[in-house]
Image 1 (cartoon, one colour):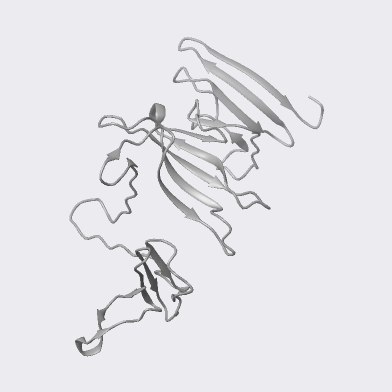
Image 2: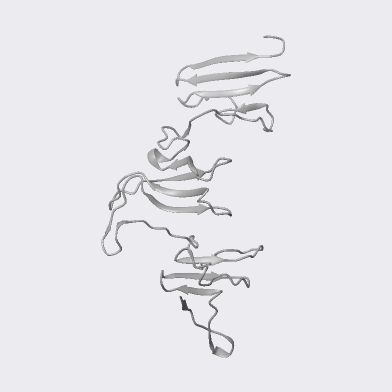
Amino acid sequence: AGSVLYAGTGGRLQQSNSRFYWDSTNNKLGISANGTNAFSGSYLPKSPLHIIESNTGQPRGVTIDNYNAASNAGSILLRKARGTFASPTAVQAGDAIGSIAMDGYPFNTHTAVFSGIATENYSSGHGGSMFRFELSDTGQVSPSPIVYMTGIGGGKMSILNNNPSATLDVTGYIYQTPGSFAGTTKYLHTNASNAASTTNLNPGVMIYSGAGSDWGLDLGYNSGTSRYRSRLFSNTGGD
């Protein structure tokens, strides 16, 4: 290990290996905040930059301030290349181009991971990507891919499908708990009037509950010249 020198009181050089630790063997820096003497020869930094703190207030972790006259702000940039630093090569489809991983003690493995994934082989004119969310089920310590958000086809999102074929692609059951919706008891609709579309060629779907305990499914389609509609409903009277 080695020391990182800094100017202390009166400009004198100081060191604090337990709070500002340099692992010269593995080239890793450890920073321990909030008065915790964490690092030593028996507990080394786990990554190139390892920060330990016990603060419960805000801000915590890492703060980035950005000042300029444009609309952009501070950012975190994660970059990926195949090959080596001296001779990098292009990312290939399926490669993770950046990840943020989370875990809790006893730190078995990453139990929640948010990643950017390449959807094609990269070149100067090709850089397709998707977001992938991985989560662990109860009783498990290894996460599985759950949600995907991709830029393919103008933007699509899926659950349990890494190649969504629609704007929203769900593998499995969909369950909706009815909530409040201003002025109506309809649960799912396709336009502002809570009815099948009458202004475009898109089909309309409406799941609703009417007066009393009525419920039903309303399917509609507008061909541009004619409007088609089919309704299925039921109530406690058996209608």
